[in-house]
Image 1 (tube, rainbow, N blue to C red):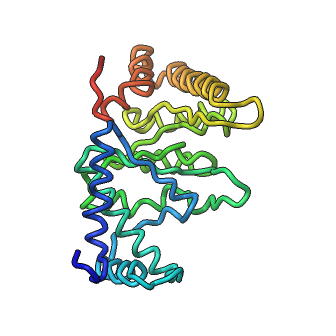
Image 2 (image 1 turned 90 degrees about the horizontal axis):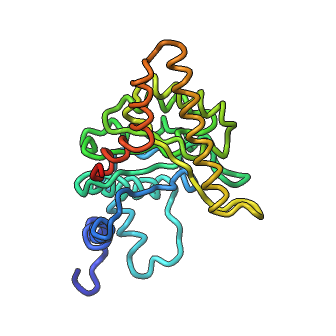
Length: 255
């Protein structure tokens, strides 16, 4: 960029965002996580590149000060940056993760964490080469919605977060519903994190992993008992959920 010239969004993407993604890939990253539901609704749309460039040029220019852009302009720029990241993630074989469902904090926007808001992203032909993961499987009101979204070829779900938000028996019901649709798209997860006093990473990791395994066992046992699948298929699905699906998604060797 020439001295004194106005910054442009494409230059920011090419000179800052892309090298950052490539560096993360070289360092061993397998996915990119968006905590967008904590900051804005998940309703990303195909970007208006010209508008995004105008917004970026206006607010990134020297002397722009601390003025905040109009929310619609802000979203237009965010959509452009998100689309670029998602597109490059596919090229780099990095999955894209989204927080969905219940979130922390008294004023979390639960409606904005509805995974259905991502349909424009999942249906975008330019992003067919990018794999997306619905973290926490829309825990709370969106569990059954997730089952329909994983029908899309490049959408997966994990049930992390379900295990600290719901009783194990209820997690089993959610997991069973998913497994009866697309077992190859369902993945084990814990969402281990610090909690209240006396509940640090070690305790939450133990509790959530125990609940996650028990819920999977309950779901598969019910499917066998109801003669939906034989025991051999239940064991095969268990291995897929606990290990195999993640190996395939993240391009890990099966050792």
